[in-house]
Length: 206
Image 1: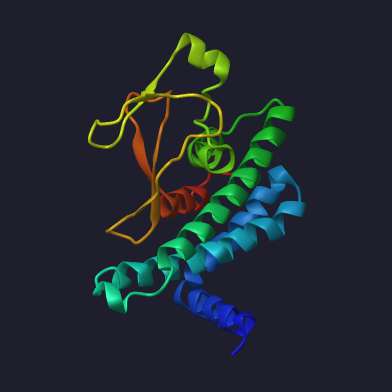
Image 2: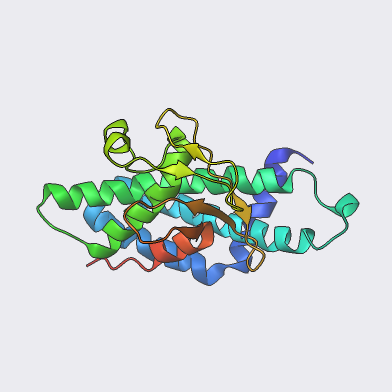
């Protein structure tokens, strides 16, 4: 069986398993189009279907990690990471476009601005190897030191493309999650891809 046919079957399984969510993504695509323009209708629906596929993969990854190592699917974590990162990068651009259109009109939308910020916390490290908002100028005035989860190996942060944000698999949902650094928050948070998708579906668009 061809890879194309296998992928088509996988998407069909995901669509059937999440039919209500598919309808929500379609509804969101038309609501957001009022802000971003009609060119984004298809883009939103595509990341919606990718979200459904990822939710299916996440469910199966969660079951897979419970198995003995020799029985687990090959490259399951890499497949999850690659698709999750692709979803974040595309979702960010859609939300950024909406935020830009609003700004051009002199309007604001708190839920869109908040989601753009949270997507950016993940997107900037993935795309640039840097922490969102930490320019060389800011580092000079507000230096930070990065340490491992156990507090070891302290290193000064430099905006030079060397920052790696290690992903984790959430043991509750199977979703990929990232320990994002937010310099605007009192404490950093673990951001799950599935939560970002849910926040996008919940956007208040009038």
